[in-house]
Image (cartoon, rainbow, N blue to C red; front, side, top):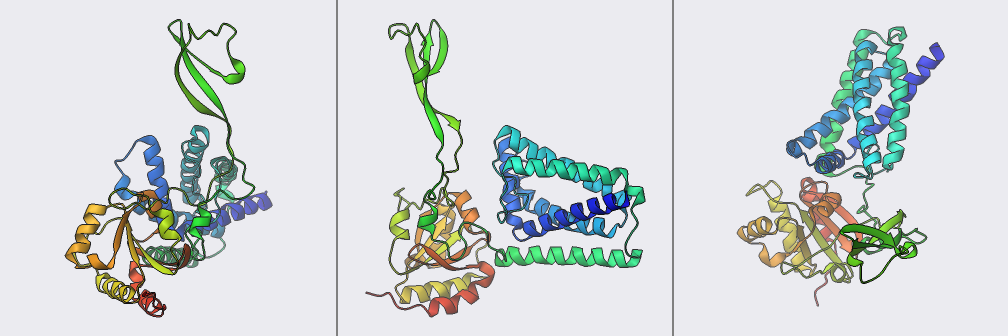
Length: 379
């Protein structure tokens, strides 16, 4: 029994620590995943608190995993883990059974799991945690109480500090589809060998006051155009494929609504993308560094595109800062911007459509030397 208890402790502890660390690398990703669940439930009361929930949940995952490995206060942590895994199992089960959320974000974007895989993982963890819960009185701590508390306190400090760092400076391990080295136009294409969705055309008719639906290979024997009135037709999914590009919904539009995505991505030479979901401060700490970057880019003939989901607010701020001649403002879907830019704002350096580097607002001063070192593109 002792071997089983220790094995269960090791598996549960390591999985919670690993899961927490992967999510700590990108807490904004978990925050956006919570928003996705709230959207599926049409529940928006807590939308503004998702980042706080994300930070707290991640810290608790890591601390709880360490506590289980140490065997410290198992009567308390077994209860907490049981409540947490029941909550996780509900979320992944809902995602899997409803089909409204395709991925649950259990291991972030670095190890994407389908809703079904996440649900299966949580069912296994639920079984292990239930076993530990029933055997919690037999678990002996590995360290003294003082040493255990010191270890947990250090874990708490490090997990909070790491999340604070990546929120300021972007994820340390970049697993997003817009990572450095990514060819954005190529990532927008369906990958070779992908299996497309299998669909059939389904027809909806009115017949004798009732709606009748059928496909072309199952036409009713009594079908007569005189008595069947066509209502609609649509493609009905028969088998879900995997023919999805890594980057979806990345569309750049001019203020007049013209799609300029491919034209801009295929431009020769260097370019800068400045992603912003909105600017709330009149004089943020990074505005001077941004101004120097824009002036330097303009002097070298390097185009700067400000990509935003808040055109009116951002264009007004740019105008007040006297930067209108240095940038071209484009609009983009907020979800695409959230995926591309975990910090608001974020600058990308591209050559054609390939991402060469990117910097959060906290690192704009580090971007300036790189932009200054670029060759002139003046005609």
